[in-house]
Amino acid sequence: MNPARTSRRKIAFVHDWLTGMRGGERALDVLCERYPSAELFTLIHVPGSVSPAIERRTIHTSFVQRLPLARTRYREYLPLFPVAIEQFDLDRFDTIVSLSHCCAKSALAPHGARHLCYCFTPMRYAWDQFDAYFGPERIGRAGSAAMRPVMKGMAGWDRRTAGRPDRYVAISHYVAGRIRRYYNREASVVYPPVDTGFFQPGAPEPARRALVVSALVPYKRLETAIAACRLAKVPLSIVGDGPERRRLESVAAARPGGDVAFLGRLTDEQVRDEYRRAAVVLLPGEEDFGIVPLEANACGRPVVALGRGGSLETIVDGETGVLVADPSPEAFADGIVRAMAARFDRAAIRSHAERFGRERFGDEMQQLIDGPTL
Image (cartoon, rainbow, N blue to C red; front, top):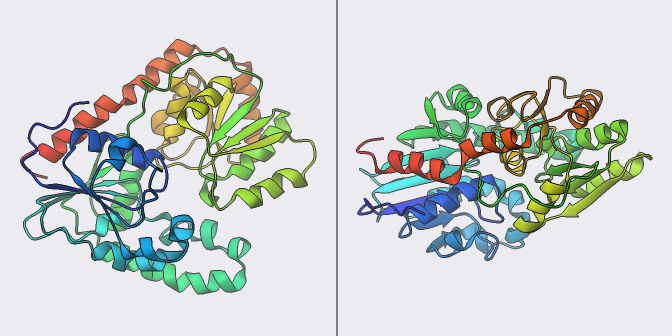
């Protein structure tokens, strides 16, 4: 840890919500270590769901925190998020760092304060992935029709507030392109951190089994992984939870011949063991960046991923994994078979992941936050 020495600035971190340790929270974890006196603002906080470095912050939540079932069904309050994020009182701070995949970037910084947005992605469901979240096959024809004007309004608000940050920093060049397209803003790129000190090769030796580590949400395209493993005759373990779990369990049970284990949420130590046990890790969706492939690589395991989006920036085809051009189950099954037959250099895979470590991320972000201008 390298706490910032130039911490006379009064810094506030604004994060969408804190309900678990995913990629965004791991980036926040590094920043909390670097800036131990910073305060944290978030729509919803589930105590104990994030790292000690985050939990030790002074954490301010919005009114959404007090609404019924908000801790488990907070996504259903999405139309309230614009009002909630704008009600945070940030007048005491001269530096705002928002970490945003939904609405944190729209926090209202006081006059004269600097606002840097570390952007994971512009709001997917309001822009180009409405059908994946709210299409008729997901929530029914009536529900989809009702949500369409709501999301159109969210997209309009998202665009109108795009000028609030002084500077955007994207998690990948792919996301920088989305920021340019939807916000008409330029963004520099700082890749998110991978804890290569924790994720390391070790026992047990891999079995002939594929692994997915993912939130169970629509755009992850996990039904492709299930179908591909059935075609390749390779057992599949799925780590993670989310609103799609019941549907995916039904998909797996409806088609005979597959071996799919839903493991739910696991501890970091258990996830690391699953990486080590897997012969190959799968990434069937189009990712904005993709922490999972690099965590798998840090454990010496190759990845089979869709060759679009952030995967093109994190996976070296033929060296750290296999990139699949076609998102079909048949193409993914072929990629799984090729990856399992290949002889990957585990040391080279590990070395590639080390380029994305925590210290590198902390140094690059600290340079931007502490710089004289944004």
